[in-house]
Length: 140
Image 1: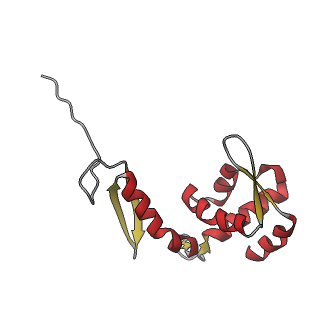
Image 2: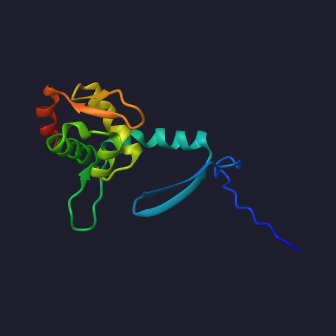
């Protein structure tokens, strides 16, 4: 006799089918919760203003660095080495941050005119504006 075992994620809030498991930490405790797409979006939207102003905690003994600082440093380093290499994937990799953290930080930089988005197929590319370079250095 054959047995088939199926694993399914169940939304921990509503009980229906979940689309992903979200892991997070709060007050030194690690958590995970299974959420459907709507609840995942609500969760991320609720945390967005806090994440935008938060710092990434480094390993013990080292100083906390804000996500914005990590991204600005990556942008400036890539701009210095090769101004044409400011692709989203390169910035995320160099900064060591998540896609979501990048999206939260990049929009205010675009709105302030410090960088601009250059149309490209697939992976978006950015350019540091002449005015923005000196301003970004102050954020570093």
